[in-house]
Amino acid sequence: MADIATVLDEAQAALTSLRDSAGAAVAGGAAQQQVIEAAWAAVAAVQAAKSKSEGLAARLKAQDQTLDAALAARKVALESATPAQTEGTPPPLADAAATALRGAVAAAAGVTDLQVDGELSGAVADLDAEIAAIADATDPLVIAQVVATEELKNRQSAFADKLALAEQALASAQGAPSALAAALTRALLRRAEASAALDQGEINAATVAYVDYQSARGLLTGEAGDSDGNALRAAWVAARDEALGALADRLQAELVLAEAERKLAVRRSAISVAQATRPADAEGAVAEAIAALLAPPPGP
Image 1 (cartoon, rainbow, N blue to C red):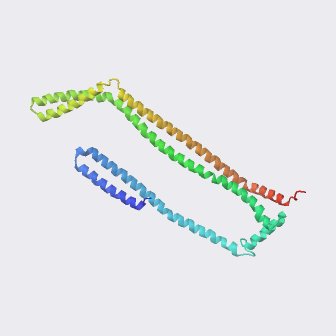
Image 2: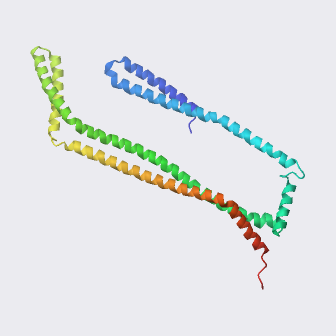
Image 3: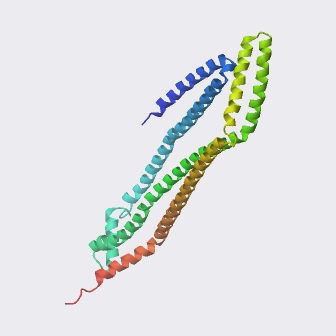
């Protein structure tokens, strides 16, 4: 596992390098605009990630004080129990007090001291074990709920990506008419400018105009072979279907999460009910244990 301090240092180094790259791109002039934008976007992304990680790291380290406070409170709680273990005749938490109370319970129930610690305590322990089993069975449900939540986040992100691609495909089709019109205008314009440049003996300018003319003309020629826009339609249909599939995946994840949350809620409700009824249930279990101990042996 990576060390956070080391990785933060690496992030700072990357940030410095990216800033230097961005500065060098700026020095390159307007022709480097796309490089400049990409460089500063990387700087912003790394800076944001580094700042967020620093904040989270500081918050985690600050929890040391929370732990110190919790342990100090624990120590106070233990110290507050000391008088009950050492003061009084006998002290209420001393072994002698426990022995006396067990004897009183045994006498009242008509059983032996050993049976109080054995069958009667066992009846209560069995009930507590059943409640604990309900609680233990909650752990896989909690894990399932967490996994389902993360899976939903992943599928939401995947759907957003696919939706963006579908919208991009649609935008390409919507922008095709204006792009073709612009290509036609540019082809005619650059052809005229190439001819004018030749008339004036400007060979270099004429060559550039000719290249632009051919580029625009080539676009029109290429697109003319697909007058119905089948390629654009195919691109849209493919992207649309991908988005629909991702949407279906997202919906499935939402259904899984809903079921996981329902099961977890049911389990937690069962725990609450078991804990609420424990006193009465424990008394009933003890009564049954006493009755079994005092019941006369079966006849021959």
